[in-house]
Image (cartoon, rainbow over all chains, first blue to last red; front, side):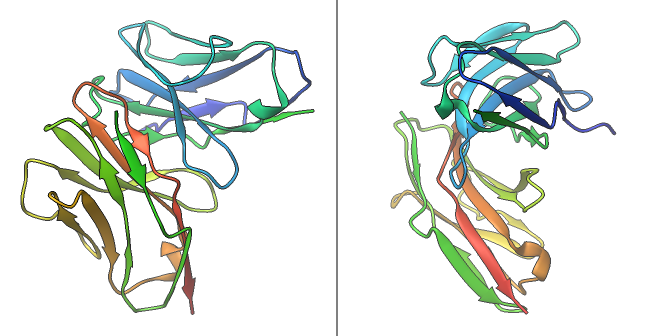
Length: 114
Length: 113
């Protein structure tokens, strides 16, 4: 039973660059949520994708965008990177877009901005 | 809007003892769900326990149980017979049927051999 997989594991970028992070959901799941987790803090919700549409969005600027593919995998894109974007980015999958459902998380992508 | 607060940044417990982690939340919804997630040093977050707000009975999962006080908007996690593998960050979270899941800031639990 394949769990949630994220790539890459680590990434180093410089200010102003653009980055794409990828996520494959757990087998059987159709919803992907993305979170930003700064060091020592709780995950902050970025957005959620269901049926290839953005269904919910947190308090993040439109530099953060995403996409969901027909196979339910998802990408998170961040443009014009800032130092403050350095964080662990977590992908979580669930069945259905309701906040009542338990989420399964990937190992995350550690993004460092120089 | 939902909010989740965890007032204990760090906790420690002796191996085999019991520890309780605190969480308070606020929501305007009547239909909501509460979660405790564990994030070990290896980073992958896993679900520990889930509580439906409409259920009065407290959820239990083996050594893990919750004390759900709906009127007080309190949702604490009790870990019995603590083991070394319980050392991790613990996050309390709240979700509704039609809204995103909100996480608290977390409590770092250390287990002393």
